[in-house]
Length: 264
Length: 181
Image 1 (cartoon, chains in turn green, orange):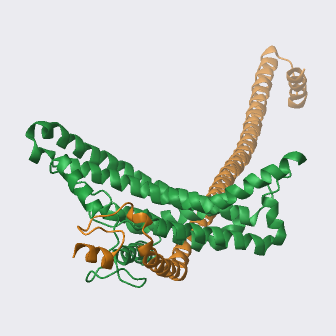
Image 2 (cartoon, chains in turn red, yellow):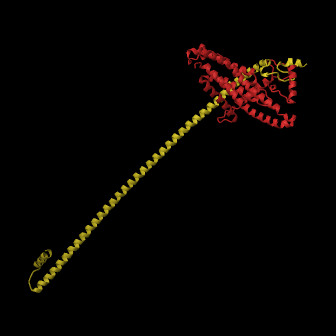
Image 3 (tube, chains in turn orange, blue):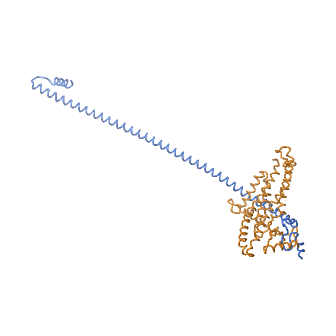
């Protein structure tokens, strides 16, 4: 009740402008409006399914003609394939290529979720910590387990920097261990934070846009300004959507490299 | 009423349907998100590893193969072309050499014929000259004979006129000696 009162007061203060920048992130059931259980079909389900459809359309339907001289969609599919494959090979090494499908899965999911999230009125699945944390933890656990399976206790040499002077090594080891365990946190918060911030800012500017309906004087300045700002932020977000997917993927490759070659 | 909706839907949504705090951190929804995320990732992984990636890899490999083959074929054709050019040049040189030979042979033939013709002509000329000479000498001989005859007759007449008796034989011998001497 207190929140409601505060909201009411806030609305009154803004003189009719409605600010709900966070409402776009609410998870709600697609059918009916009961509570959100684990298996409830929600807007999360819808947008993830659309992600799958887009990936299927691009990579499977796009390459279905198997043309020697590719068409537009096949070119994009081949470009995406070559881009990630080269990244895996360059960053993590040739022996990381068996893990290429996993990394491709992560990249395609994130990049399509980010771009679908930019459609007006959509739901951005990757803006939620719950989603990105699972992605990051999956990478973290896979990489850690892989490291121990491949190298046994030798994987721990990742933390023991033999290039440093002996007295410094325990201190460095402590720092390395901490930074190792912080990886999944930064990995997930970076993606979710970037997605959330941009969308919220667009929403805030969007709330300013109808100012002209309330006060013609201020609105004459504020409305065009906020529309320009929305456009600019939207363009920036297009860039961020790709860059964050790229960053997430390349960091995954870097971590994978640590697991495959722990010796500095 | 309001607080009831609040309880049933989620702790993260207020009774007007607005978000409370950051919906991204709402623990009520995490299970749902994680479940659907795992399903989505598994589906994408199978689509990629079973369908998309092998197909794209095959297409790329095929293209690479075609390009390599085409390049090899081009290299082949280039070698063939240079071979053909070499053969052409060789044929040209051969033809030139042959032409030179033919020219030389023809020249030699012509020279031989010419020489033969010259020799023949020389021989003929020589024969004709010899014949002419012979005729001239015959004429000369006959002229001599005539001169002797005339001289004999004249001598006989002169002797007769002078009143000296002389037989023909002596006169003839005397004239003969004179003419010769």
